[in-house]
Amino acid sequence: MAVTGAGAAGAAGAARAAGAAEATGTAEVAGTAEVAGTVETVFRIESARIIASVTRIVRDVGLAEEIAQDALVAALEQWPATGVPDRPGAWLTTTARRRAIDLVRRKETYARKLAEVGRSLEDVPPPPEPAEPDDIDDDLLRLIFTACHPVLSTAARIALTLRLLGGLTTGEIARAFLTSEATVAQRIVRAKRTLATAAVPFEVPYGAERAARLSSVLEVVYLVFNEGYAATAGDDLVRPALCEDALRLARVLAGLMPEEPEVHGLVALLELQASRIPARTGPDGAPVLLAEQDRTRWDRMLILRGLEALRRAGPAGGPYAVQAAIAAQHARQVRYEDTDWAAIAALYGRLLELTPSPVVALNRAVAVGMAQGPAAGLALVDELAGEPALQGYHLLPSVRGDLLERLGRGAEARTEFERAAALTRNARERELLLSRASRATPRPEPG
Image 1 (cartoon, rainbow, N blue to C red):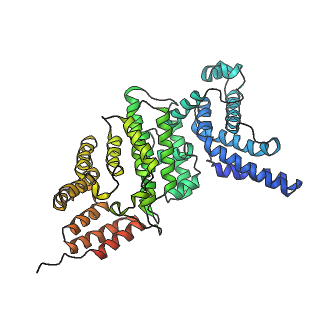
Image 2 (image 1 turned 135 degrees about the vertical axis):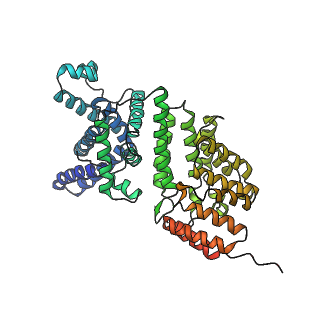
């Protein structure tokens, strides 16, 4: 099954519409182009809800996306002549739903169709607009859980979520993750096929299954944000567009699942981390270390939103809420020197209990090194040297280099920074690490 993107479908529809307009003059061509731009903007905003609504009818996310694309092309063909409707999103949703119902009618017998989608769809024409916003939201929640189903690989979940819920084209996803468009397209096709083969139900799970499935959903949003916040490869340290996509998805989840504390914990973490983005790089795109960041450039509105989300997460928070509490310790301080590193080290200890991980242990070592001195931090880092999960992880030698430099062991620090630079795949991080290596010098001997 071919995967089409909003851009591809839009280009095809726009080409047909523009071709028709050429006969009537330049003004109409300009008007058509303006309408086409409106159509694609509306579709990008509404596509997730349209696909979710259609999936409830056809029970196949791949087929639902194709039907949504058909509705987009229909708008590109009709709106230049009829004008943009008062509620363009409702027009697209209604058109897609009608096509979905027609498809079900053609493919199945009357009786089977009644059993699967309900008598109301057979006997009552589709409403002129989505009159039940809550139903649409329920469908959107079902779509989120479907796209993030554990039957899919992590890479497939991320690609499918960005495609269906983020409204990104395969090309945009490929550029964001520095891979080929063909690779992303293949992941999406395989993901849809896997969901269909496994007969994954289009539903929101409940009970113990819901908790397990929710962790998969939150993980996808978290990973998307992290790739934007600290790109693992490429020429840029930060990719703000990916952070914005993840933030939007997290906020949607919080609106759909207001009683889930860990959803608010994730929102809090992302809001607080995103608040630092303007200060994380200099004018030339070079990384700026936390200690050197201009905190007046931190986004105060995002900080306030993050602190409110953290309050809603409650005191007995899960891993995301604890990470948000750590970020809040930084966000509340106007000066780096006022950071309560003892509190941060304690929070990392709590996080280590919740999610035992060498990476969390490394972060705790950094906080201990700030709270109790570099020697205490270095002792903890050296205990992690043999961890298989940290072999090839550039932040291990980077942290060790920082601690050694603070202890005055410049030659050793230089070696660690150079090793970290060789391990990272991000060009900006590599430049920073090599710069630190060149500056690391032994402390002069007294006397």
